[in-house]
Image (cartoon, rainbow, N blue to C red; front, side, top):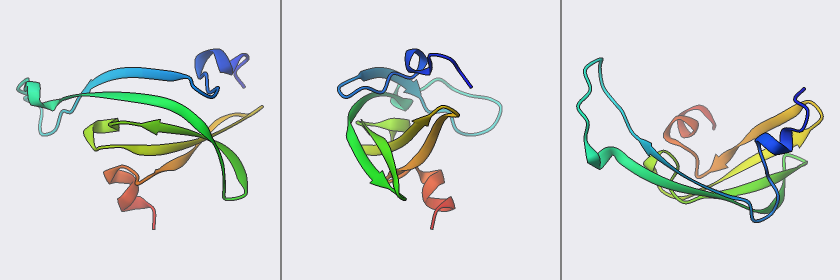
Length: 97
């Protein structure tokens, strides 16, 4: 259990983060390509009931350079659990029916 987890993962309505990333694919040798950079804004937009659990909804504008999605998280005394996203990442769409 992490004390004060809200300080490390603030999830109050309206909280927002902006980050930049770079997609790297392929083998060991990488060539820097400006076209692989992306920016994402992640914002807490509310709550929903998912699988009988009240989850916090984060709207992401461009996570992993794959377009917009909503992600779902649940916090309790044991920690923070990820409940997936819609429409989901390429990997999630392959794993989740």
